[in-house]
Length: 294
Image 1: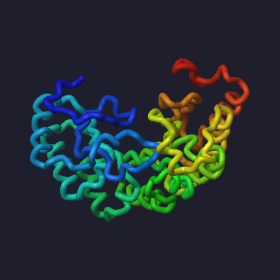
Image 2: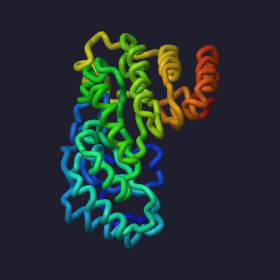
Image 3: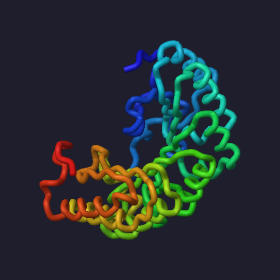
Image 4: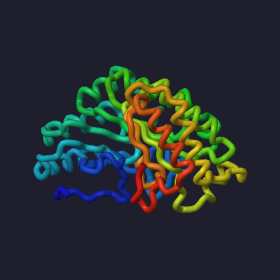
């Protein structure tokens, strides 16, 4: 752990792959904060950090963390900040943490699409190399029911805008988000978004509602039925089968995933489908309490 001369505004979240990154809170909370499946920032009111406060914090971090190589800009939606403000943050990071090789952040698709290609290119040149985009689903009906505030079209537009600027993207899809009724269209439409955008990374997590289903069901409708294990595996099979990817690093190895898959789509597509097929008939291949992996 780095000796950090700062105070985080809890709760604090970051992608699993940023476990070794220095986390800097550029904003607090999420600018949207209405997704019915997400409880991450419901205890926070969204607001940008005061600029002078943040700049001073980065300067102090530079005095203690010269061995840091990666920075993650939290909280849920740093990309909502103006380009001027983001460039100032990136410049401060580059000045006081000169060893940084990559800065990353979460981004809503519409925030990416709202910035011009030139703005995103400026941010990429200044060090913002990777954005994590919670697409969640490529299906418009699922997105509407979970109050994501995005559409298939807006998700594709945001990802394509980032790629045109030279940024890499890591796309997240939620297994089970459409329940039993919308499972197949959720899987195929989500694959379509990836096919159209060819992200560098893609991950499938399993939808979890640790605080109960009441808020989720109130928006989705009482007909929502969660997937059982067999249905969850079948949805994953349908999703993988529908992908047409060239070189996307794929993972389903989050703590929520019982079926753990790793590979590159598409060269490993046949292998992953074969693993899913075996898991459907042999439950001993499923991870139990995080111990068993395919």
